[in-house]
Length: 344
Image (tube, rainbow, N blue to C red; front, side, top):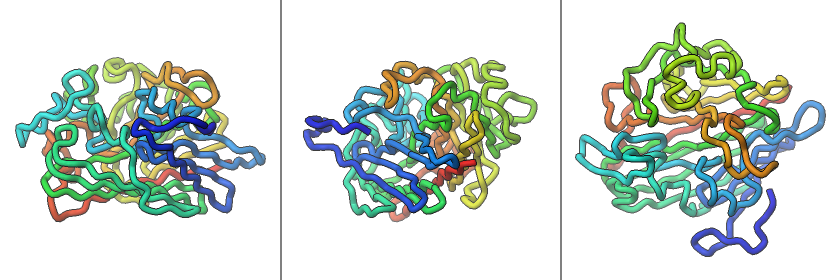
């Protein structure tokens, strides 16, 4: 990453960049603005190093994109219909038409997180979110810890506490291209250990019950090329591709692999493990024009996001078969996701 010599964040302070390394030669880079994952450089079998993450050329470029590249998302990832917590009759700050997306117009991705501690292998960030922030109830303390392990796994651990009942759904919005950003990420093969997905309307709002993936283009229980059934049905066509939550069969068991992604050349594999009940699979349908590290801008479908989370609009759907997304005072919300990179 190129440094911004005379650049500062919107609060007038310099960016704080943290670089983690392991003995295998993998390097992962982060910044405190948005507690953002900037880069994942993976050593390959042929001695080369491959960048697996989409990102911008400089920290300030991240202020001029709306794809949430690598950012920590909160208080609530994904969409809340009509920007409303219906059980509380509480309106939130809307930022995607009448709906709230990824925590609102000034979500956690647009804040400076405090670095609590850091070492060669981990960095721990904290953010204090006051009562009424983006419309949410309660004072919330959120933290995220990134740890790079010796098996080329980037572990992300989230934690939150509140003094008033509030839905919490933190995630990371990394986009992966395991072919070092060459070509269309739809040429990757994907496996998702999920028997059900959630249909949505053209605004990404759930509009039907959970649906079985069997005999649909959403069946990734065996690895297949993302392009093979792209835009094959109305559910995909509504949002210009895949941008859907899959309810995981692992049911929060982090020892079970929830998803696998393989580069088109077969040389690099990503395995995803998570305690979260769902993964949002997004094919970067609206990436076109996003500032890029290796070129002027990315094209649509150049990266794939696999975001660990609750199902979208969960605060308004207690009937769905997943844990409760509401954090109560006195409780601690925890979630962990691991992204393991394996070169072949």
